[in-house]
Length: 493
Ligand code: GLU
Image (cartoon, rainbow, N blue to C red; front, side, top):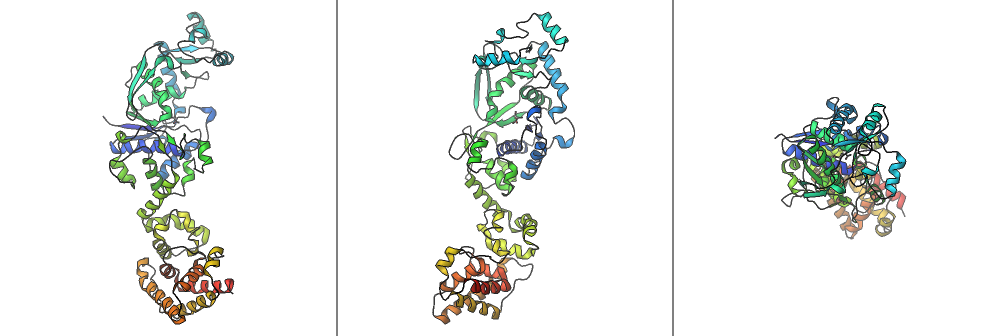
C-alpha cells in the first residue's frame, strides 16, 4: 500500500513550533516509507482566518527543508475553502442515511442547555429542536424555506468506539461521552470534523499523524468513516509537548519562559538543529546517537519508536544541537549563511577572512548571532573594554607592555595567510607571534601571562575567547598593532 500522509494546518495563525514537529513526523514517515507528503490547508474557520498564515506555513516548511510533494503549490484542491460543494454533498448523504440530522435550535436554547451543564447528545437531543422532535413534514418545510439550521452527527446512544492508535495503543471511547458534533454550520460551511474526514478519504490518506490534542476528536471521525462505509486511515497521535517545568507548553507559558512560539522566531537557529531537536521531542532512535541530519532522520524514523508519554521542551537542548550542527555544517556553509547578514551590518568582508574567523572560533559558536555579539571584535575594533577585565588584568605596566608588543609585531616577519588559505595555515604566524611575546616577557623578566592578558583585552575588548595567538594571527598585523596602540592610549595610565 502506497503511504500517503498529510500535514493539515489551519491558517488561523503563524506556523508554531509544535505544528512544525507534527509536519516533521509526517514528512519523515512519508519519506521513510517511500510515500507522499501532502500539505492541506484547513481553512474552514473563516472567523479565525489569518490572511498571511498560509504563506507563513509554506515558508516555515521550506525553511525547515520539509517540501510537500502535493499541496496548494500544485494547483487548486488543497485548500478546504475550495471544496465546500464536496462537503455539502457528503452531509446530504449522511442526512439521507440517518447518520446525521438537521437541528434548528436558537442560540438562546443552546445556551440554556449549556447552562444546565448538558451537551447535545443522545441524552438531551430529544429535548431540543431537531429532526428527532419535529414532525418530518415540518422539518422538510423548514429546510425548503431555508430556515437556518445545522447538520449534526447522529452519535449512537450506546456502545463504544474503539481503535488502535499507532502511538497510544488501543483507545476506547464510550459513545455516550460524545456529543452530536455539528458537521455543517448554519452558513453551510463544514466544521473541521466533516471536512477533515471527507478529505482524508478523498485524498487517499493512509496515516493520520497529528498532535495528541486531536485524540478526543478521533472517535467522532471513526463514526463518520463507519457511517460513510469508508475504511479509516491508521491514526498516530503524537505526545504532548510540555514546558520545561512540566505542564502543557501553551502560548502563555512559552512566552513567560522566553520560548518562541512561532517557527519564524527560530530563524536565528540553524534549521538542521531545530529539526534534530524536534525529532527527539517524542521519537527515540534505537541507538545512543543524538545528532542527526535530515537524511539520517529520513532513514531511521519510525512511528513505532514514538513514545506515548509527553515530551519536554528544553531550549538549552536546542542551543546544544545548534552548536553541534554549526560544526557539522562546516565553515563554508556557515559562512555562506552569515555573510550577507554580516555585510549588511558591518560592510564588505573578505570571504577568506570570514572563513578563518569561523575556523578559529570553532565550537565556541553557539549561534550565528554570536558573530555580531561575542565575536564582533573580529570585524570591528573594540569600542570599549570589559571593565572587570580591565580592573583585573590591566596593571600599571600594561600600557608599556602592549606598546612594546605592538612594536615587536611591526618588526616581525609575519607569514601572512594567503587569501584562500584556511586558518590552519596560520600556524606559522601563530608560532612567530607567540615567540615574540615570550621573548618580550623574558627580556622584561616577567611571566608571559602578564602580557597575554592585556594583549587579549586590547585586541578583543574581552578576557575570553579562542587561543590568543590563533586569534591574533587571524586578525592580522594591521588590526593587532592598531588595537594595541589604541588600548594603550585609552586605558593608560
Ligand atoms: N486543522 C487541524 C490543525 O490545525 C488538523 C488536525 C488534524 O491533523 O486532523 O491542527
